[in-house]
Length: 227
Ligand code: ADE
Image (tube, rainbow, N blue to C red; front, side, top):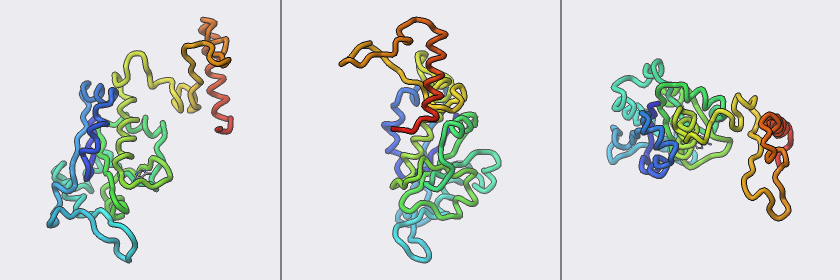
């Protein structure tokens, strides 16, 4: 998986890259690279944004600036780049990220993530350069960097070898293996704590019963109201 993140703050990703599953994915041949819009702006003084036509608060990332950065990276018109590469604009109003979408993205050979700042992108970026608009939830962040990290985190951990042997992304919350339901509860030692005991079945060593109990719990969680 080759991921390019377009951002004004590449340094924000330093901590993220050190996370074990990300480091594992990178060591196994994936890449995570950054393009700073400001490094390619055709405007003077490193300008990348402008005030919105029609008035209103905040600043908008300019379409010419995004195009210049994308051309510098890909040597091609971003309009046609969409035929060969998934280009995702991170925006609060986009398709809400879920496990199904993460699986879909993890199956791509390469992704481009466009982070916005301020009030977001000039609409023409979304219309003409992006193949997808993705939101990590219906709330507004100050910028797309955290959203880009969320997408990368969820995608990288799906790749073979990203998680350690003892972990697996196959049977976890919202996966197809659990019919999209939340994961069953987990317990570890001590078996008894302040009178709170671990369900007997988990201590039974009876694998078939444990499996059945877990699937039941998972199904129940899919229908129970959340606390
Ligand atoms: N940029 C700002 N808020 C966002 C959100 N909720 N999801 C994706 N990108 C964003």
